[in-house]
Amino acid sequence: MESIKLCCARVDSLIQSIHIETARNINAMDVSFQPGITVVSGKNGCGKTTLLEMIHVLCHGYSFRTRDLKELVSWNSKELLSRAFFLGERESVRALRIDSSGILAKKDTTESRSTSLFFGEIPAIVMQPSDISLVRGGPEERRRWMDEMLCIRSSLNTDLLRRYRRVLLQRNQWLKQNRSGSPTGGEALFSVLTEQYIELAIKIWRARLDLVAEIGDITSDYYKLLAAGADEITVSYRSAVGKEKKTLDLERDFREALEASDDVERLQGITQIGPHKDDFILWSSGYELRSVGSQGQCRSAAISMRFAALDLACKNKCPSILLLDDVFAELDEYRRRAVADLIREKHAQVFIATPRLQDIPFTPDAQIEMG
Image 1 (cartoon, rainbow, N blue to C red):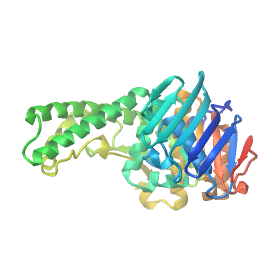
Image 2 (cartoon, rainbow, N blue to C red):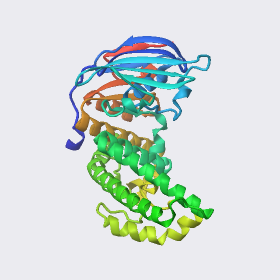
Image 3 (cartoon, rainbow, N blue to C red):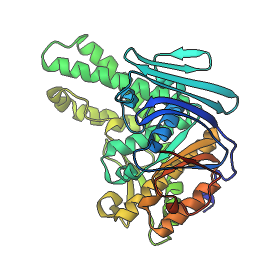
Image 4 (spheres, helix red, strand yellow):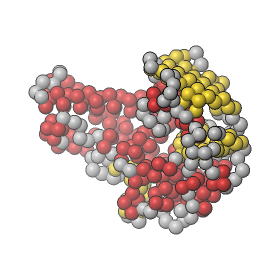
């Protein structure tokens, strides 16, 4: 199990305090945090998840609950205000205002109309009951998980994914215009976009294949621990070019696949093949876990994927923040204690939201009672 011991020392506070005004069901809140593990307790609906959500937004610039940050504003309010003090390599202050005019994000003295300003310095990994969709849900969930880890690995990957999505959008726009017979730029532009698309897609494939090679054994080891050694899983990357290998002749295979799909793409007006169609597969006894796994097996696999992400974050940008939203209530006694033991080993500042303190099988370093 050496591969799951990447991060084991206790960390000082990364986020030292937070101020929140009119965010969902939090009217006003000022709280300072201690190092280690903090349990946030209280009845359902009192704002526990919202507190974790605001921490995540100020770390990453996006919510783990919604794609529209305006949904964070309390229904009876016109604006949301939040501010947090962080201590990483240096002290930092982050602030956010959301109102009818849009978003204003501030990091120290830098202001932006985009919360992407916050992304890239302080990884915050979230565990929640809905994570089971990482295993049982569609491939888009697992692609998002892979790409989040690529961004944790390197800011260059963040830029790579952004460029890929932009070129994919432009290529799809051309294909849609072509269906009506009037594509901007003609075939010459389509050829240029396709070459750019191939170059970026191959870079993403290589980055994802390297990622799967790095975290595959880690994910499997966590799963063995959470499943008490009862069974094992393996992982692989399923490429849209129709192969499941760690090394591919990417450019040759991709060009052949694109050429073969050209008529269909032009008919349907959308790019058929690329990293946006791929998947991360978990296997159990030769079958896809999403199809044959029990509720407990799939939940253990999802938690293993989150711990693998945390280890990667600690390895690349140590330390990190771990947010657990009512996770323990969904686990049996063995898995509850196994997750608790792992959390206490991690080089992370941890926040656990729960309506039932008795679900937490250890004494935390601090407790916040809400409601």
